Length: 411
Image (cartoon, rainbow, N blue to C red; front, side, top):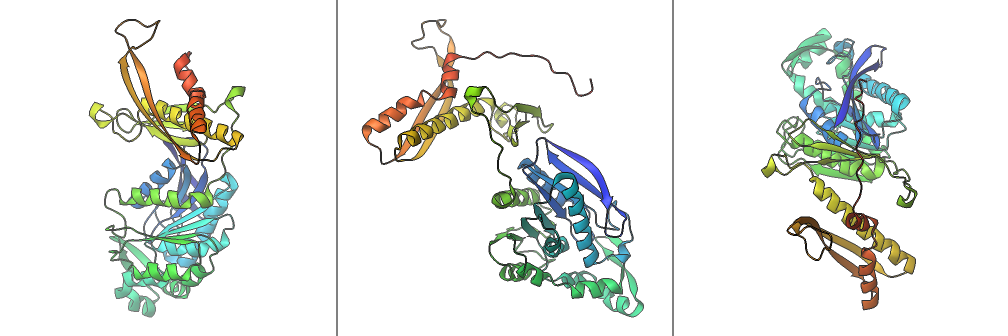
């Protein structure tokens, strides 16, 4: 579950830029600023889908329309590549003032070239991602090559871009020809992820090669397989968003907040809210962390997350592993790795003095793998310690659930 709000802020010339701020239900781990492709808008399919994927991974996203495009104010004919870079800096300044971001810049097509250049003007940025970006801003002239002579001779011309008329002036051509995108990539001094589809017919894959070779390490390249330039095929943009989040995490995520130990009674609240997608899907928010819960497809769910009992099993497994790790470290034992496999079932009561005959109870079968140069006595002791896991003890002792009705937000 996420929130999406319309916002506005001044662009490079003072005109208001229309934007959308998408956030998870909890405090984002980091903020990203998304720059759309040439003559597109913040609401293009790829921008929406990539934003959705990033928000699911805990990253807040600001996406906006460049001056004169979408719902933003201004005259597109007076804009160029340099004004796009200035709009990006203005958007970053707004996000910095309101939320302390962005830590991540993402640009699609010409927006990718713009974020490479703009990153030099945004000190808080820690990582940059390009998607189908040209290595030279002048590449965009290919899309209007039949009008270039007219623009040069007459100073302006109306061109068709994505089925819509736009007026381009000579200053636009002069500006993109003077842009130094490859040089900016070479002096970026930030981690760069270059994403490009090998079959991209709008911006050839050779552009990705030039950007990647120019950039310094750390740098990464991800081929977008059979995707087209605008990532219009179902799933392509979502996958791109997931890969961006995974790549960027070590560079942009803030350290987790300290959590009180359980003995103090202090734990973070767990909030579970229906997402509205599918019959049973719920968003699980635990402090600054998020996940999905769902039911399997064969019982009417969407299968997009673990079911409730699988979460209980995960809690038991994680608690078991952590308990063994804490004990081994305290003893100074050479424990290398612990793996715990949990299977949940319901079985008839066996050896239970106070249970009704024929009654079924929940059974968690736990298999523990202990790796390390440990002797037999140490391994036996760790297996005993597994039963000291607090979640294990809670499950065996039973727990009380106290329920109240919370007031709705409107009351």
